[in-house]
Image (cartoon, rainbow over all chains, first blue to last red; front, side):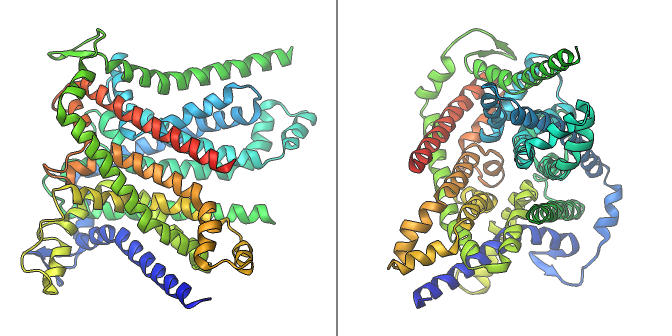
Length: 266
Length: 283
């Protein structure tokens, strides 16, 4: 290793550290301000308390928006995994020319700027007279995450040997039995990963939600509304809790992915 | 008989699934595009074909200027992300050893962490009495707090870079990580200098990942309307913010739709162009 290479290596290590620190700075500050008070821009080090967390129970609006987000997230998971699985299976098994078109259409909302997906659904719902509600938000989120769910499940289906399903049919399994006893156990992990990812994305989706939400609020929308008056400590506390939840979900996804990769190797 | 039922049931599902995506993706897109040719009449939408919206876009300088400015803003964000993200991805792929997946995970987690919160906290970092100004003051580098960071374009750029940076690191890392180290060693054995090895071996292999990441960053920066609304102030408004305001207070959906159509048109051209360029490179 030359000296020049060594220098660039350390420079890059430094940059990486800097980037990671910068990415976490806003997050760490939020967690910090949920515990400590500031006065005239100075941190009061003796003001540590976890009271905001216990007080959160009385913040009806925040709790309601959190529940709404969980509702939207869960429904999005169910819809996107069911529809995503169906499309992935169709794409994998059919030989027609339509399937490339299908993939293209599924990827459209994911590739376009989110503002376009949001406002085209808004206009569509107005034209057919569907009032805006949490359910229209679910539709928007489902369409947005569908491409990712579809791709994850499809990647898994493509690793399976075609003889797997054929032998199930040869042994007399009906379509439903073959799906339930043969296909499903084999692709279970990819469904879980896709679902967790869909949930994590839905939990934080703001740009599409802003167009499709009616009088209810999801959690990011509540934050957006609270921003004008500034965040209370309870809001910071709710943020910390959600951050813990999302990091947990991402770590869970990563663990499942790395485990399942090992299993393929052996 | 059974196979006939099977055939029909499967084709019915196919039809249903196609109807589903046609109704939820294609028809909304179509209705949005057709709205761009309508006009408003008080609080009603006049469903008659007219090119008035597009005319207004090209006649009124504000819109074109904002659009061009937003494109430059998105390009600045993209190139800043490349400059910061590429070395990080390169470091992870080549030098981070057994820590590379751990660091990668650390870069992925912020991607899923509340978007609004990041913007909000950037306000208290960049602001007049924010963290940066305080640190600079404490170090006696400045006497008065700088106003350079908040309520302008710079704030939008910095915030977007911080939000979108992982999107460029991850795909670039994935394609750089595929390079077996013996290929790089072979290039050295054949007499390559480090820079040559980078230019002729490493960079071309990592290029597709970099392109995918850059496109994502560019398109998301181009269409963003929340960041400029929250940190941009009055001078930092972008094209996305104008589109959004037409759906909110201004209540001119057709005009907003036509502005968004232009955005869509430009994004489609960019995606198609890069797709073409990367394919050409491959062959």
